[in-house]
Image 1 (cartoon, one colour):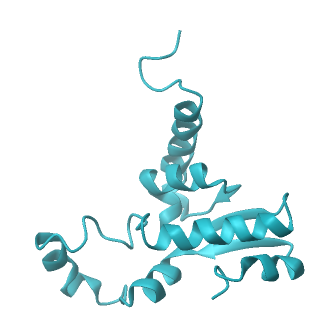
Image 2 (tube, rainbow, N blue to C red; image 1 turned 60 degrees about the vertical axis):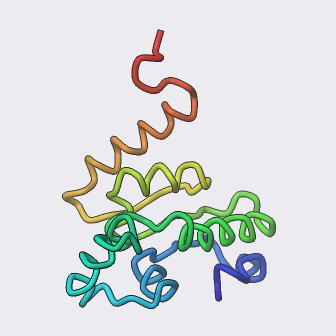
Amino acid sequence: RAALTAADVAKHAAFFSFGTNDLTQTCLGLSRDDSSSFLPDYQDAEVVSTNPFASLDQTGVGQLVEMGVKGGRQTKDKLKIGICGEHGGDPASVKFFHRTGLNYVSCSPFRIPIAKLAAAQAVLEERGLARGEIS
């Protein structure tokens, strides 16, 4: 609900931090704790393309994040917004968060190098300086 009412929430907030693992569980109605018992079958049946707890479901959960960012920044254009959780160390998710306008991601310490590299790649891609395009 907070993502849907972000413009109002931002009136009382110094920052937003999306807990994307919890948001994924709530949005998709799936439990991360027992997902290993059914996600492989879902992937085989092409219900999901990847594990949504490892890489953000950009078309579903990602829309809630986008709505929250848009609503929050409507109220406070300089609102600091980020995410916490394992999605902060997934390259595809980090690139999505950059495109969405987040200020930061947090992740477990062992994933920090991956997150930094993905963030740098996202900036380069945004500037048209992806692989082979640097002159």
